[in-house]
Length: 323
Image (cartoon, rainbow, N blue to C red):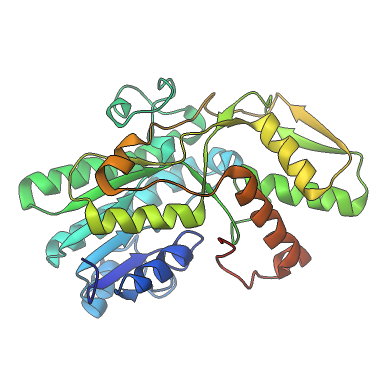
């Protein structure tokens, strides 16, 4: 399906995009992954200029303004506006330029705060998201509304995927905006190097999360692009959850840090549990994640320790390590 197709990947130079792009190239696609500074997706004129330039047959929309709980608390307005506008502009351009197919990547944050576990796709509209990341989650949820509306009125083949938290080599390790896995790895490595006796972990440690290795996520996205053409949203994940306390203990062991983990319950836990029903992805387009959490975490720790990023420079290796 992707052989000789012109494929535009927004966010193609980001954490996830740097794994999706080579997977698409292996599938025979001609891939365009422009850098953010070249085309501003928040500006409709910038999006039109991009589509005029590459005239895509397929669009995979990965571009997002995203970060961890602290980043969400500090930037709710920015996160809502930027993500909503990027999605609105990209999907409208797909209609205007007669794109054959658009793949929209949402977020597990779009699910309601009190979704029964495991999260099933039909529960997406059963309530309001958890407050700390609701603006981001709702902006992404609106992409599903747009996709389904455009499918109904304009026959646009738009599909919508709901991945859980991603992690892996090349992740964002910035102390102000990173998610939980890179944030903990950085804290633990720095504490080990400095000989600190304790590392603070946000929240009670009781909240649970499901994590998907970035290369597995890329594989799922490409499989959906090739094989899935329906309007219903589809979860991407592993179906396994872990508490933050157990995650921190695992990373402590992998880093080789011998100090104490101190949990700070005054900091937000976020949603109490997250774990997906992943049966639809396997049924509809044959996706099953193959990287177990221990293996993926070890690769991520090893990459961080070996990369220039650990020495306060820019990362050199964007994606890799999957055997």
